[in-house]
Length: 488
Image (cartoon, rainbow, N blue to C red; front, side):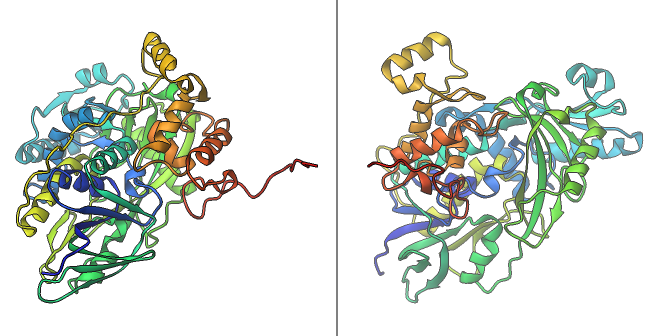
């Protein structure tokens, strides 16, 4: 058999691709991740509800149901190992109409069939005690204590960093433009905008573009529809309006508009569910945001939308079957799809990583475990949440941890520098934001952006301050200098 550059090449550096990379880094294989953008976590993984779903929504017997429940069970330990913010706050599915009470019962039975533990129905009195701001129309709810919230940016970046620390190569800014499989056991030839490489196994974790990658390797049809969800982010002063993730009863288009705290202390409200054609269509609309406000009021009263600091939208990779598509393509040996990973893909990601890694290992002949695999990652210290004495001790060791850059979130120069120096590290202002939350506060980067640009230019070899982007190619922040100093 012809020697390949890699045993496995993973296409896509979202949470699924990075989870697969981390699991494969346990094995003695040569692996790389190919990502079209200049950073990880640039697609669906950066724009979602940040929910760890209990697993009661998916149809029993589906891969989605199984991996959701397994992934949710794995999430607490994974986040502890990688230094990722996770809170097991539980979720409530609120019923506001007696006519739909049977639907709530059916949801509980579906969850039990999926293996979700400790589900129970609660009445209005207990619901009010748990959520004082629940809608006046609420009459009952399904309580799921195993649900939680996670920081999806931290999780994706931490998975990538841990995989890289264990030998996986991240090739960012390399968009896959062609795949060809040789005959007689020859490896896959992968063409990118930058180079060509060979891999014995190719994993397709390309999100909303997984159908395009699939078409390069297989004639078997795969159709992905971008499903847009629009959201409101409210300031931290609104973060305690609800204590748990509050859902409405789901419909065929998804779980509806939710209201939830975030691990950063904000309140998140959304999403819509709009099937669109544009795979880059992450704009927000007046109609979509009005729908979010209207539907949020069904389950939670007096949501303080006046505290909005940001709106955004994200795309889910939906297919008509409404199930994950994971497995080796029948007519493309060595090509493994990890496609249609829509909600609850974030919740399922730890299990998706294990599942796909198992498939790849089988194709490669079950390679041995890597000697010296390190399962843990030391996260970047969060000075806003640590005791003052601990922060003071850190500043004595690292004075740059005493220089606050982002006032809204209390993020220091030291944190930003560590985010840039990570492997793979931040290369844009939003890359810094995703790792340490600088720019996520009330002013949305109005104060700290110039300093972050300065630090990126200082720390990234060959990057000039005027070339720093908001979030990669096509998002310049500077057009030129307002003043030029005459050196003469």
